[in-house]
Length: 319
Length: 223
Image: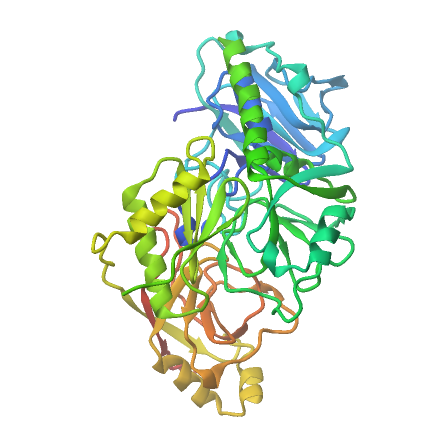
């Protein structure tokens, strides 16, 4: 894994971490998946620069990341448009391009979405821990030294032959997701929808919720009308495994969409976001409006198939 | 022994909970442990993760590789097999604990709430051998039970934003140890220097579901 030094972090911005598609197989040790919150953007970014779609990337939040390029290389910016620039020149999203030694890349702030991804030919090289390069923030391992990026960090990228082959490739424009509030997230009911009153379930699928500022990588906290549970039930349930997209409703009736940093929990889950809409969760911004639409399991799987078809079509176009 | 059939609860289009009972009990938890082991050995197609809880396990799968109905059928078959998976012998870990003072800032509150002496709290906490029901919350965090009824206290009304690594807490009929600094709402009665989680170790968690834990009070040296 001898990589070449490729980037120097001049300023880390609000929160920048090294992530891949997540850590699986360690839930029985209490280890959550972590991983990029917009996995679709990561897969496309990696494919653009000629990587395996599971390669590690930099995930940055909202604004402020400044990076110096240490050697000529091919990169792609995907996910939320945080207006990456070199100097005053805007950098295109969803397409691969050269950046040159000595240039500085700045993420100046959101035109859309909340998190942007920087994929680099060869992938960000860090030691894989428990099978993944994602950063586990609660325990401080994986990613870059188990922590968010800081000023002065040097990121290496893996070796690439003829990076020129991967420069100037674009993702299909019609397949670029749109990230805009109000969000309409598709869910399937459960696992504990039967613990909520009919009125509570109605509220859940008809109300407009507002994203609270105390949302972070552990969860998107919503504010809105109370989602009522069945009368007589206790606030919490016996702790059980959980995964991203599950929507738990604690005692105050305000839903929380669980993201990738939690392996277990003791609150009731009224519904779960479908796989095809999970990547959107990474782009939801405090202050946005969120509504939920219940779909059937078949519809959810069909939507996932359509998303995978887009990725497959893109892969074929690269050959 | 006949048991109630497995109950499946979907969690989205890519996972479901398999419930083996409704209560916290060593028997139900052993059945969860056994099914986890059987499923890991069976390595069913499309299964990406198996996360055990007190009375259920969460199975995460790729719905484009295996349809949920088929996966449920395969899991039911695996669960019905007899004798294939004996449980591994449970490890017994003795955990040294410094009780009270700066190590256990809630011990006095617990003493006040229960109306017994601090020595009595320590005696009750150390005389039980606890079962590790599950590992969760943060990497390596053991949920231990059952705490003697005489020690049952409510969670703190306001959770702490930072509980130090190594803190030993109690809440209701449970006790646990914080492997890393994290937020937490349990009453902290002591501290242990033991390293519960190390990602470079195999396995990374010192304790696993089904293991046993005994706490031992460390006499503080008077200076």
